[in-house]
Image 1 (cartoon, rainbow, N blue to C red):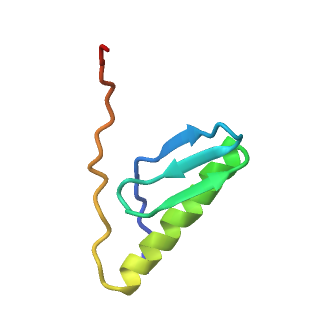
Image 2: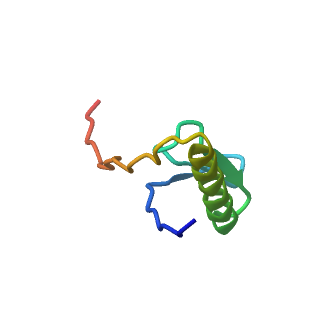
Length: 76
């Protein structure tokens, strides 16, 4: 199968107890944790690759990354 390069939005948050949590909104349920930022990125890439393989095996289309990230000002 030909290689295809995809680009997906990944949200990474630091955790209060240490480490990082990451999720990929294009794939519901695709999230990982890591001790370091770099480890979290590696784990996220592996998770996304696994999701793509599963989608392909099931004949499902690979989702488009239609996430918009913006900031929202809230006054309380």
